[in-house]
Image (cartoon, rainbow, N blue to C red; front, side):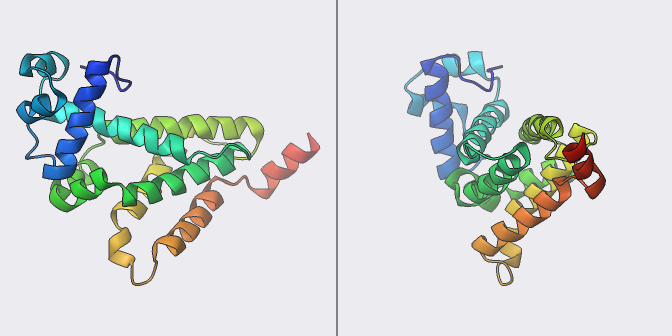
Length: 203
């Protein structure tokens, strides 16, 4: 199976072709044959890297998420500020992303499987990314102490709900206000309590 970081120009071409197919057809109607045709490679070239469409799409979505989060991370601020901005900004970008929009429209039941039945590779990747940011916040004192992976899993639930259910509450929360309220929710969840803040100041 291919890594989440394409190792060659061929891998990148295949993933780019898969992205175009999913954005146009959805997950279920995307085939490795069509991906190979658009990438300009043979079918065996694709099959040697990905055994089926599901594994290819999984790697594609991991790449897409990494790029979205990386683009959303601000340069300055403490670890909590950077993590909150990355999650809220990344969520806003996902809501506008044509690839994820197509999946939500045409393959909602596939997404529901991951949301309600089991974690997918993308969610596990996000938990890992969030946990890294949380540990950095533990070190600089901007995030309350706790189990980083448990805190990251809670962030996933908050962010996932905001992205996938945004359309259901649009009469109450437009895109801008959703981002404002999500920022408050996540920042409040991560912020250290008064005791921890005082300990950091006077230690």
